[in-house]
Length: 145
Length: 486
Image (tube, rainbow over all chains, first blue to last red; front, side):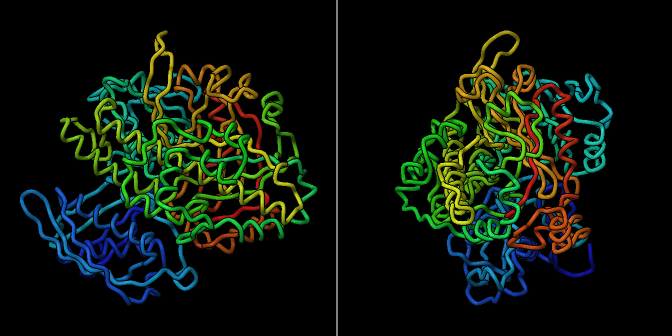
């Protein structure tokens, strides 16, 4: 892992897109996980944070919450044609699962300016984990591309 | 003990993973040594992705019959390995989301033309440019066909048959599409509104990643009788369309992963891994999943049908080739779960056969094979890489006995996308292919690097192993002239 407080890297996977994202909180790791997702699809640096989308989700575990969060963003890309570059996520863990409230900022996909790349088909459960490691929260997932 | 150390070689390219631990049946892996070595390198005990461990997981699922099978293009997937086949008893077995994946019925359609390669080489630029402009591809692209919610339900229920009725193709196209282009048992009511809303603009779009549209030529006929039955001869120009069920299928997969995740817990199924969520085939959840898979499959059939129609219009413009001269050789999927009849230990049984990154490969005589192909079996369409070759293959009696009538679907990656992007530069890849007479139109140059020929295993070698296995035979080798990438 690099020294940054929050970030993401792509991990070598034989066919699909494997992401490791981390942050000081679970929410920050979720935000970086989302950034890693969109950075595979488009040039996120060129996406203006013009509009916000609010998301509220709950799931039986923090790992399944990560899948739901990323899957909601993938679906939104097709529903509204928007792509996102900035994320603010608040995750609350409780005995029977986890929930989040989040904002994602972005704009309508511009097929020239945003340099579209890979299309993400879905978020798998392969190698899925969200846990605290050496004082940071680390989220791992694999997306089918 | 490392799973790889347990493998016993039982044939030239056949390996047995003996039943142990939680396995109900053995694993049967068809692969050459170099493929096995690659799997061992990338999937050792420490790795999160091991295709062999995934074979073991499949063999550990309730109600699996005979063996968990991996074909010569095997590589790590999620749930099943890619190139994985698993057949399950309808009473005791399970339906596994990871045995189909997100891109339900992703597959290949092959069209034949009456033109020879020499007739079109000087017009390649015009042919490629028109196809590139005509067939929507790449992230965020949308098709010209906009469907209402009611029409989407018709696509889900009737597949390619519906779009043919709308004027996108002919009845002959349906006759040469697996399942007649319409999988029975599809129920639009079990597909979420979200999935349908995502589909709204995507019928007739190619997508991205390894999906492609290629103008190819038959470089070599390997088996004359089967090639003649398929209407293929040396030098002939053909068109291959590789795409799937688009956002709708992807959303069905995502929804099902969640629903069957809950069902696995409800039925107390002891999963070998969280990737293997499932439901008993006979349960309401299992039946609901299969109805959704059939709907997703129909969406893929319809998608390839609309693209075939767009290809015909494009070739008519660029080459003056009449649309009715561009005929479907076959359309076959490689991510599906279907109820089929197979003979197991001398007894005919109905089984749920999952094929993940594997095609159906029914040999001679099966009633599912179109009549004109029945003496040789239906064509298997094996996608290559953009710089090398694709193959037409066919099934055999041995394949019916040993692999539930299944065949390979492609070469399989040798390098991760990350490594390929580091090693190759998109523009260089495109320029090098051009020197070999292959013209590439790519919506995304980096994508071209990730799909560089060197990022894949040698398709000839994979096909050689598939032939050596006795499960399938090679009919013709195809080479690309024009490549359109998403």
